[in-house]
Image (tube, rainbow, N blue to C red; front, top):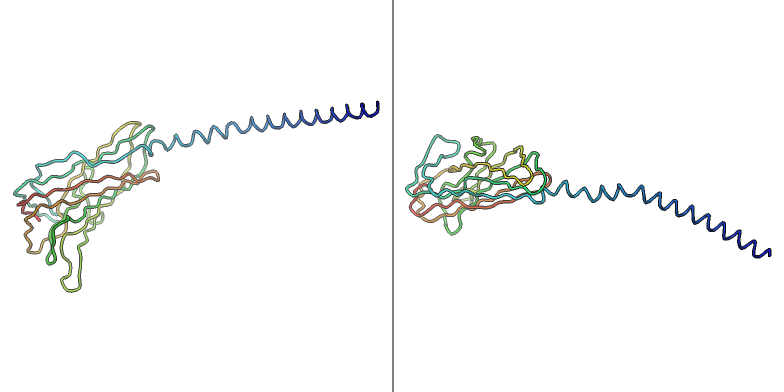
Length: 222
C-alpha cells in the first residue's frame, strides 16, 4: 500500500508538472504568432521594387537637327537619325516612390576604326524636359601618348530624380539627345550604332535598360 500511495503521489506530481509545462508552451506560442505574421508581411513591402523594370522606348526615325552639347551650334543631318525618346519605368504591385539616381551612358560605335582625330559622340541634351548641365555629363575620348585624344567619346549623364509610380502604373520620362565632344577634321561616312545603357537605382535596387542611336551612312554629322 505504501508503494502504491507513493506511486500515485509521484504520478500526480508529474501530471501537475506537465500541466504547467503545457500552459507555458501554449503561452509562448501565443506570443510568437505576431512575430511570424510580421516576417511573412515584410516581403510585400518590397514587392513593388522587385517587379519594376526600365525600358528605353518610343524610337523616332526622323531626327535631323542635333544640338552640340555646351555650345550654341546646331548641326543638320543629311539623313535622319534614329533615337529612343523615352525612359519608361513600369511598376509592379504596390506603390514605388523615392529618390532615384539615373545614369545614362552612350558608348562608342563598333566596327569603325578611328586612330587619328576626333569625331562626335552622343550625350543627353534634355532629361525630363530639362536642359542638362556640363556638371551632370562627362565625355571621355581614347588617348595615346603620340596621337593624344582620338576616336569617339564615351559619355555619361547622371542625375537624381524623385520618382513616384502607382501600383501597376507607368512613368514616362522624355529624353533628348545631342552631339558630345568635338570633331577635328574627320568625315565619318559609315553606318554607326552607338550603344546606350541606363541604370535607375531606387530603393536599394538597380533597374537596367538598353538601346542604341543609329546614324545612317551619309548623315554627315559625325
